[in-house]
Image (cartoon, rainbow, N blue to C red; front, top):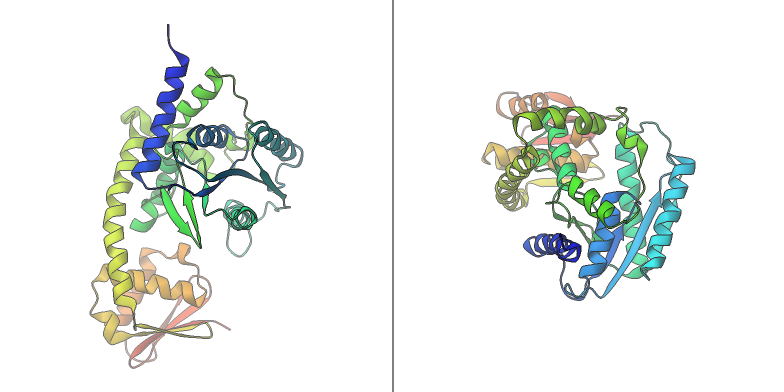
Length: 339
């Protein structure tokens, strides 16, 4: 006969190993768990609540955002989360917004929702003086993100996927379930009679992620049943390489970029001597600082900028995503928004 208590402890120990491996939490941390009501976030909350003594968490609380995209269903989900937090004796910070199902400023509904969500995390964390926000991203989420970015032609930075831990201002965003498959989470909840909510829009092929989840990933799993783990390993190798590149970029950009009222200038003599991989990162930073749309940068754009640096003369220019024109002067590249 299977000992369910032992099985439960094993799954929580796996979460603990992930937390410790990536230095997600330290004794005395104040942790805000982002809970939507779905199986991943519900399991996350139960895991953190079970492990808070071992991790020496000073305070654990819950935050929940109702995007208003599914009026009745999302309100029901939020009520469920509030009740769950109350049953565990935890504070719950809730907010409701009205997010239109339309793209804005070149961003999709999903991207806008993400911006609003992380802004809420910062707001809720401030109310309880939290320094950590934990989200329920799983191995499935990571694999889907990597595939989406490969299909759309992402750089190495994009293929890194979802970071186990990353800074967001003064907050550290952590993903304790990043090495765990969603099917394991759902099985645990079902076996233990723990309730959760299902967002049925996640099953409809109206968003690219849903197509990846429902069609592309199952197809790839026919050829490699461990494709999610393989993609995670790929990302981890790339992450190590990118961390080296990032350190080199930070050292190289000191003194190269000059900025004034949204206009960014790069000293050509300093940029030209950098390895191409560092040049790309410096140019990406400059476009972002000038107010451009970095996510829409393509390999073609990079080749055009490279040509501007190496072959074009004074006065040549080209347009980059987000309404930014980059112009070559005698000694600099100037990034400026088009009027």
